[in-house]
Length: 191
Image 1 (tube, rainbow, N blue to C red):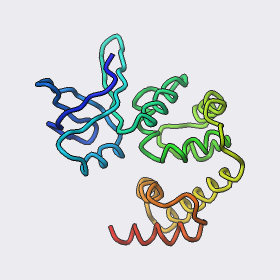
Image 2: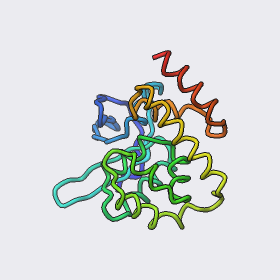
Image 3: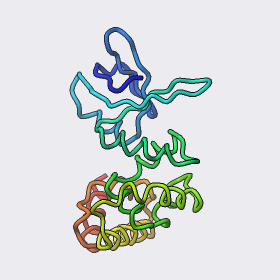
């Protein structure tokens, strides 16, 4: 099994990249968030790898941080969540936000992710809540509700869910709802 790869990016597309290591080019699927972070890196890139073996394919999934890899592997351990779904989930919010949603049982937050229905969101909460609840309390559940309020406010102003999620990743989760809305509007206005 491949655990990590370090090399030069030979090709980048929207969904995968080719990482050249020792004369061999490895096709590695990454999230959009990871792909955008790779734009800022140097010639040598190091990715943590999950090797997914199926009957008809051998796929590599890459992550900049080991924490992302560990969370990805927890997600694909949930029945009904495959590697593509797990990448989608990781691409829409920070790991901390996702952990808060799961630990507080906030199914409404998870169902806002494209491709995640109510039953799948409930499975994620049921199967992962005990694994990630260390140190997360009800106060953080309130801040998650604030993030949902910000998301709804910006969507009502005509911004897409994807635009809003990208901006919310850049705003400190410790700020109040009004401040988050103001900061998000500034960022969205600069695009």
